Each structure stands twice: as C-alpha cells, then as structure tokens.
Length: 238
Image (cartoon, rainbow, N blue to C red):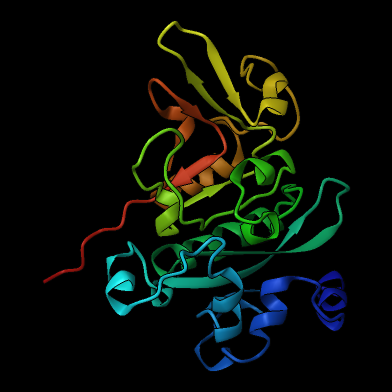
C-alpha cells in the first residue's frame, strides 16, 4: 500500500511514537507495520505521569492505583481524517483490549471510516472536555466519572471515545433538563437527525466494537454516551 509506505518513510510526528521509538520492538505485537501495540517506554511513562497517569511518591501509593504502567499498552494505528487522507493515530489502553483495538481500527481503516484525530489525551493536559471539543478520539485517562468519585472505565484503559464532538455525552438533571458535553456538541445531541460521523446501531464502529465484546454508551438508560465503547475485564482463570 503506497500510502502506508509514504507514512512510514516520514518520521512520526506523534508524541507517543517518538517517545517509544524502537525501544519496545522486541515486545511489539504487530498486525501490520502500522497497526501494533507495545509496552510503554520509560520516556512515555514519564510523559504521561502527572497528566493522564497519577504521580505518586511511594510504592504503597502506587499499589493503591487501579492500574499499573505494566497493565497499559501503547497502540499505533492509521485512520482516515475528515479530509479523507490517511493519518497516523495513537492511544494508550489496557493490555486486555489492545488486540481488539488494533483489529477494529484496521477494519475501520480498510473501510475508509473517518476519524478526525487520535492523539494522546496528555496533549490536552489530560482535560477530557478539551479533548472532546477538539473531536479527539482517546482511551486511557486516569479520572473519575463526571460529578462522582467513581473511577471511569477510562481510568482502567478499558473505554474509548470515538469522534466525541459528533457523539456527545448527554445527561439529565433531576428537573429533566438536558446537559450536553462538550457544550459545543449541542447540535449533535439530536440523534433522530442524520449527519456525518454519527455513531448509531447502523454504524460500522458500533458493529465492530460490539462484535469484539464492547458495550456502547448509546445503549445506556438515564445517560447517553454516544462516543463511548467499553469492555469489562474478565477475571483471570484460577
């Protein structure tokens, strides 16, 4: 694939790709040259610490975290941007879903499914709202669910948000008033309307993620998270 070769020949502009470099090559799991996952290098660990990953001072504090660095994987894929051009994408996820994501994004790329951008949430200082407003597709971010003290599935690296500006997070107040996040996504909260990049049950994203055992936030009762797919970590066999 000529486009793929052209992307490879250029030095990656992605932060994670440049920080990992070839340091994790021996542990890289490759679907194709551009679709792979691997552990986080020390450089990449340092980059996300204090941003998407909590900075802790002691081993005791580290042991209390829901995930360790070793649980996480760096994922590199290609995707088509909104101009229809091939682009590099990257994210960090739980090792448990890394193979799923590489396979899903390979299928999306093969079908020329458009994703506007896919960079690490750390590029937005770990600010989920800023990432959503920029329509950035992202996965790992050690944070709580909005307005709660419960860890989000994103904190475990087990959830991904796809084209979030066009697929907002919609909640309702006790009075029944609709709240749309990000606020700029208000026009896209109307899911009875037809518009580009809308995830619904006829969408390829929905089909692929659900086939891989993910659940979709658009199927939830009470709140609707149209951008969001998550997978539950099955306990290891004894």
